Length: 112
Image 1 (cartoon, rainbow, N blue to C red):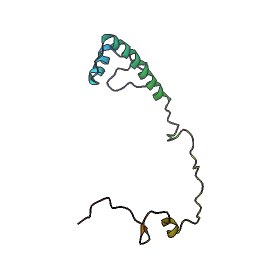
Image 2 (spheres, rainbow, N blue to C red):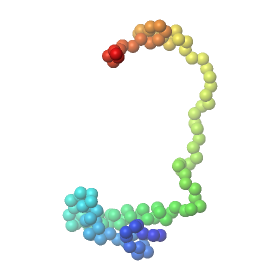
Image 3 (cartoon, rainbow, N blue to C red):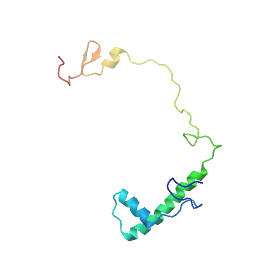
Image 4 (cartoon, one colour):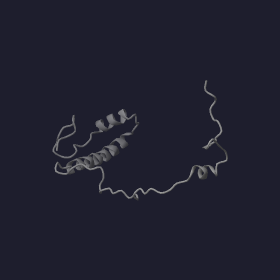
């Protein structure tokens, strides 16, 4: 497995982050960290980078990419044509109608 561009390849999944590298990342992220936090974060980032490296090792060329882990099936019922409401039935519950359409209050001013 090759290393990340710009990092030396030591043969291990991660090469160990130095305090300077962690401090640099903290500056880039605009985080104020203490010396104790630098040591803590270096260890945590080492674990994260190791996990990412392991995921990269799993990918195989003979496995096709997929968008879902399991096959998808349409669970909807088939479309069946059935009678709907007539215009009179649809308008029967409307508070107001005009010329066979729903009448609604004007919400915008008149256009010129």
